[in-house]
Image (tube, rainbow, N blue to C red):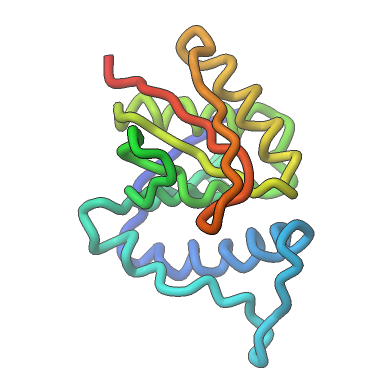
Length: 163
């Protein structure tokens, strides 16, 4: 299986927009979101991920086929963090096959920083994914902080891979 994490071109924005709808459909199980009057979940403005220097988008492919995306920014919950994995999506077909773990590790290796991944309390599968994925990255050294305030409810996983 050839797994790639690549920066998208500007023309790939629509690919991520379409995959975002699949991601939000999956996520509606946890956040109880509904479609808008046009039949979309409507994520918001994805253009930031192409034009803001603190934001980045990546496309995931498996054997040349679209398989997901990753969105990164600096909207962090913890004071010591620098970068956040804002959205992380792997299509169901490719889950539980090591795709997510490999792209997370590749992302961290490409961008050394003080990272965090905030997961809503209801999303138990994502919590398990990050515990397992971070547990197999760089000797498994990471922290898990439980937040429950007006800003965030759920665990925030963090790691520092700058060295």
